[in-house]
Length: 587
Image (cartoon, rainbow, N blue to C red; front, side, top):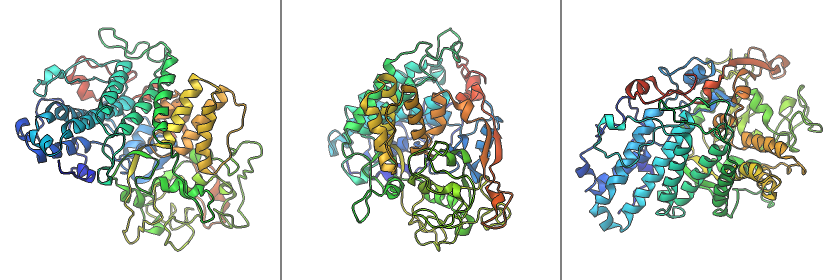
């Protein structure tokens, strides 16, 4: 079969569908099955359609960061505001992807069941039908996981349901969470058998390979082992189907942590080269460039699987301040700013951290300059990659170096611009220093779904629960910290102390990559972290860089997070359509 660039797999874009009848027998936009699966070109198009449902978190309006304590996206938070204030429900669901992913699942199932009919395909490239069938199988498993993490237990529709099934035949009760996990893992294992270990040709990067399926499996099993899903006998004892079938297990299973650890280690063992690093002209590790360029240098050695065509141009213009002709829109909370370590690896409240809350700096340092607020001095390199603060300079290498004015009357401030950050910060992670917003010239970038640093953190977390004091726990956390340019963890940590350290390291290393909102849920701490006051600087104050009133911690929003918010509600239209479908607790 003639190779087609993976970029073509996304040209169809993401197309919205109604919730109604998404499992009906024949998609309206399909040719007949016979016409599609006897022609090589149509088969390629159909597989492209299966890929086209993959989310694009580089699209600011779709990214879920502002629903967590990491951020507040000014231009994009109509849905997030409803979530954060508790103003949503089964008939009005922000970021609702329920029917969308079932469309993807149906498309994948059709491909899996029909592709081997394409004699022309296999005649041109022997074995191509088996390989692409495995790609579709892995994609289907991933779409089920995306449903599972957002909505909890869902209905698993297997190949036993034919493409010409009636709508009534698809109306089934929900499977249990453990059944969903087993199905996803089994499907990933089955797909992996017929996939190459890695994609050998750049033109095909972004397609499913064995390593990608293993990474998905590792994340699925980590979630399944976590407190929300593993022996949670407090919150979901009554979460059952109408026939009394329990949808969540109430029995803790320590072996789930071992399965998660083993799955993550299997991916790690496939990538002996380690984390992506860059070095100075003297041969020294450059932590700033290393972390920044993981997200800039396409298909670098840390990437396991990503989306080759991502809307990073739009992300960059939303992130850029008005002074750089941007939209001033991607804000970071004070909670996230405070989370970053100091350069010595300590947290801001630790003894000996060197943190200074107030006052203006009096000299330049490697990352800061005179008159920067002392709060931002001597922080770890990942902070300077990710956070744009008042008096900082924009990341574009060709920028003038003019300090960014986020105070009230400043050019990018509340009263100086027709839009503004509500926190007094902007987000610069994922922004290339070669992207020139004023002249509309951008670096081509991908969006990374899975990368090696996550596998290190997944492995350490699972191992700490399964085998406390195992030397690999500190080893892999310290590898992440080393690349970040901060010292190793202290020795002699207890299991609970190490657990807290691992969680904090995830918060920083994986910030703004759509992990945080699900991490705090699976750890059962979301009511502590996602509800209550959210802080930033006092954006209503300040007439100059030296006006200290701007630097007062201020509440920009008080958020609501109730127990029912651990899962999104099932759309009411689906509850009405399928009388066997149980709504999520509390909704």
